[in-house]
Picture: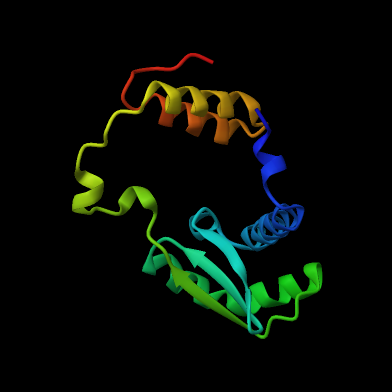
Length: 143
């Protein structure tokens, strides 16, 4: 089985690392509350895009946008002129009829593929998430 990393374009992995570094830099500026609820979504038309999961955190981030811009310019060389804040509710908080219905059980082949992927990835959080997905209708999965 090929490692998931080999299936992705190197440019995409590089961009993901850049965004993760930028997210960490922005989070280092923030107080504990909004820190866990802020991600950098990219740079569009000279605006740094910040993503958060509620309107309350978005309001707090708006107060800090000047400081955030200074930080990203000084440490990352980004020439962002403004900050745009987007609210994207956390997946766990989204309720809809389609999400509320019972999911079909996984086939043995799908479960096996998920467990194989969980063993192949280096990221412990991703590995655990794949194991949880594989176990969703069959009970606990052993490492």
